[in-house]
Image 1 (cartoon, one colour):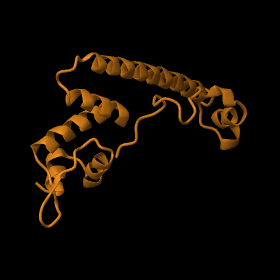
Image 2 (cartoon, one colour):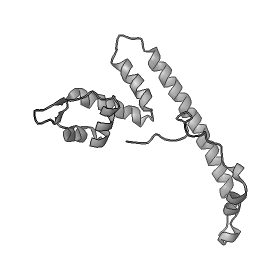
Image 3 (tube, helix red, strand yellow):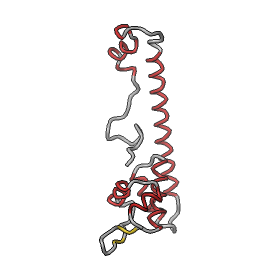
Image 4 (cartoon, helix red, strand yellow):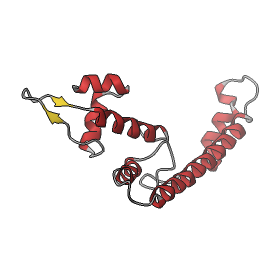
Length: 152
């Protein structure tokens, strides 16, 4: 099948399929005499695997590691268990950060319960004078916990 058919069958955009190919997550497809990419059921299954992992908010490196284990079924699955355990730790940390963010926003919202002019708004005043009211977020380049992964 051509890339458009693969995209339709999997619900994945063509540009994403090409991206996964460049990243080495999808094997390079065969080429037709007219140089069209030709995909098979292996690509459909692998793309479904990748998309399922992405839906679980896994990074490309985590997906690579899982695919490596999947491609070597004779290996013990301890690496898979360890990866999922680490990912669960990331999710727990993210939940804690989101709960802290929720608390900070609730505290901020409590500063202005009644309609007022913007000049009298407790929220705007707090934002202008109390930067410590926001929960700390790891710097860019830290682990992947701070936010959702960009979808490609």
